[in-house]
Length: 169
Image 1 (cartoon, rainbow, N blue to C red):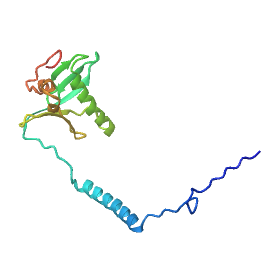
Image 2: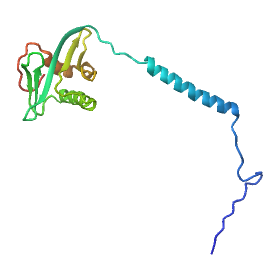
Image 3: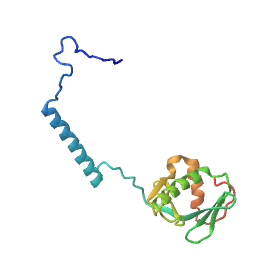
Image 4: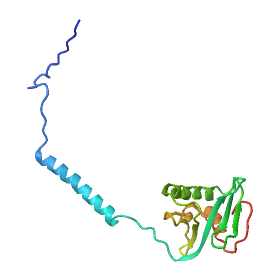
């Protein structure tokens, strides 16, 4: 048994499938708009148009630091210039510092750079504090995260090189 379905045109319609053709001027305008958008986007990317630059003031203090994992899950921070211990952070402390380092180390790993290169902790004359990976150019503005986070990194900037055990405050 075969079932046949038949579709009839709407009442008043001249054919079952009316042909709709947009005006040629509209099609030309749409193509021109798409091409213009691609050209402007390409030029903007090429020449940096619309790109915001985060400029910093004058460098006040800077310290090159190496961060290594301790066997107990802590982090050992050494001054990359002198090789002296800067801070020993026990496991489970300094979550913000760990998170910032994880983000920078991930970028370094994705770029295929050595994990041994030091990070730069910098204080600027406008009051900002940054930590930067010079191998990738990635920079985190620590001061954007509030005074508690700034204090934790300022302890690492202490150029006296004193060893601190316990959470950095």
